[in-house]
Image 1 (tube, each protein chain N blue to C red):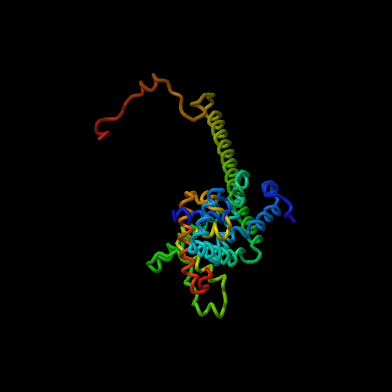
Image 2 (image 1 turned 45 degrees about the vertical axis):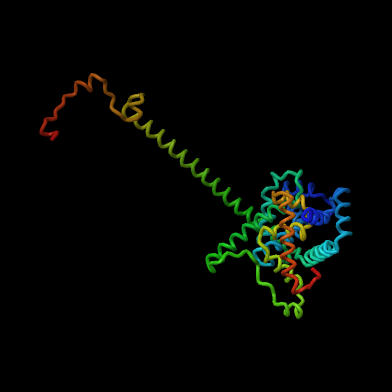
Length: 186
Length: 144
């Protein structure tokens, strides 16, 4: 319904109280936010909550949102901050109950189980979840969200060189984790 | 040099290399089978991750967001309603208080028959001489 409208137009209408316009923005950016949040947290109920909160925060800041920054980048920033908060909460919980800080999502499935179930999506997701948060961030932004190195550096407020080195290390670790499932393909 | 080439390789996926950088990378790729292999591996990894990434939340996500916003709006309205009620209650209390003070002042003025501050406050009007001339009856024993 709102597909033909630009982001600016939808934002303007949403500011004036048009809920349908805001719903249009949610639909338009759901996949981007989901890529970031699920990439960071894995597929879990908390990811859905963080996704919702991302849009609720956008709604609250609509009046102050300046259209010179891209809406996608703005949402990605919110999604990243909320995901990092959730990871910290997870770590605190795990520290409390298991006395061991972890920001990993799950253990990777059994290699043979993969042959039977062929859950490629889950394997890749869990391999990303095994990365340290700082490497995971770069991998998610570059490889899932499709941001360029420069954009990633701007979003994370780190130098381009740091993005490149973190990406290289993240990719190397991912390759090691995925090798049992995909062999030399990765 | 190797680090620089690897950086260029990573940057090449953005498509933002200058002519000079592109030439340097192509040259290195043509000379190094290991680098070509690395490039293929990175491409395969990028493809795998991009293909397998989950890009949607559970169904009816937009509806859940709109519901969360409506709930947040309701909470805000509740807070606003409370503030308004508090303001109204204060106004009523202030009005009743001011009326009571006014009535008391009038009653005092009527009772004392004096149109003065002291009369309004119900205080006996005494001059300084009267105060000074008031005999001090207390003895040392009374005080002790």
